[in-house]
Length: 444
Image (cartoon, rainbow, N blue to C red; front, side):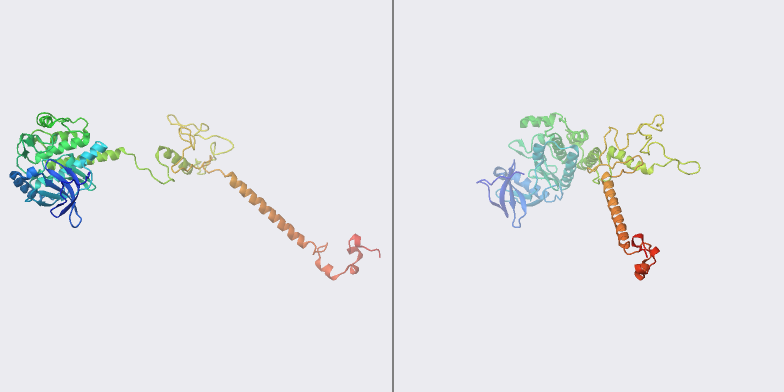
C-alpha cells in the first residue's frame, strides 16, 4: 500500500494513536497509518467533517461499529478501537501489510484461474464471518482487498451496515463503487448478504481479466449497466465463468449463498491446482549415476544387457561356444546385421553405445558412458598397459641383475673343481702333478 507524508491540515494524534503517514482517502474520510504506545500499527480512518455533522450518519455508524466488533474472521482486518462521540468520529483496524488486489492486477496483470479461485475461497470465508455477525460490507471491491503474506484480507468496513438496512445516500448519490455495486444498492432496496456476493463476483471477474465486467464510463452509465445489462465475462476461465455469472445475477435470490460459494471455489482451486501439477514435468533426479528419460532408458539397457544376456545351452546343460558378436577377430553382432537376423516385425535396435540418431548418449551430470566391447567388458586402457609393461621390464631387469650379482660373489671363492676344502688344505706343491691345471704343471 502506497504511503504519503502527512499534510499540514492532517492531525498528528488521534485518540491514543500517533499518526505517521497517509494511506489514502475515500468517500468516508482519510485513512492514516498510526501506532499506539506499544508500537502496534493500525489503519485509522477519520470521518469527513460533513458526514460527521449528519446525525443519522452518526447513529448508523455507531450501530455498525458495535456490530463490527463481533466479527472474528481470519480474512478481515480486526477492529481495534473507535470513538463515536468525537467531533470527527474515527475507528482503527489492524494494519495489514501488502498490496491491494487492484494494485496487484494493475502491475502484474490477471491472475491464473487457480489463484483467482483460491483468493475467492478465502474472501468467501471472510464474508461468511462478517455475515454471521449480522453485518454487510456493501463496498467489496479490489481496492478493499489486501494481499497480505498470510492471505487476502477484507478492509474498510466504513460504509458497512447491519443486515436489512437501506443504502446510505449522501446528496442523492449511492455510497459505493460503480461497477461493483449490486442492483439492489442502485435501486435503494434493502441490502443482504447476497449484495456482497454480487460484489465478490465482480471482483473475481476483475481479477481474472483485469477489467470490470460492466466496462468503463461515467458513474451513471456504469450504474445503468449494473441494473439493466448482462456482465461481459470474455476472458474469464471456463472453470470460473458459470460460478461468476451466477454471482452477478440481477435477482439476489438467484445468487449462491456465501457458504455455497466458498465450498465451490475450494473445489475449483483444488482441481485447477491439480491440473497444473499434472502438466508440469516430473522433477529431475540429481543423481548422476542413474540416467533418466528415454535416452537414459536406452543407455540403461546397454548397461544391463551384457549382465542379463545368457549364453544358449546344449541339451546336456553345457553352454555352447559363442558365435559372431562376442569376438574381436571375426563375426558380427546380431544387432548390427550379421549372424542371426531379427524375426519378422521386430524393430531394429540401434548399435550398442549409440542412440537411434547415431550419437553416443551422455548421462546426466556430464559424465560420459564407459565404452564396452563385444563381450560386455570395458577395453583396456592403453596408458595403463604401458605403465604395467614398464613395471614388468624394470622388475625383470632387477631380478636378472640380482641373480648375476649372486653368482659373481660365489665364483672366486670356489675351486675349479668345486672342492673348496682342497685349496685350503693342500698347496700346489703338495698336489699331484696331474691334479694341477696345465699352465701350472711342472716337469718333474
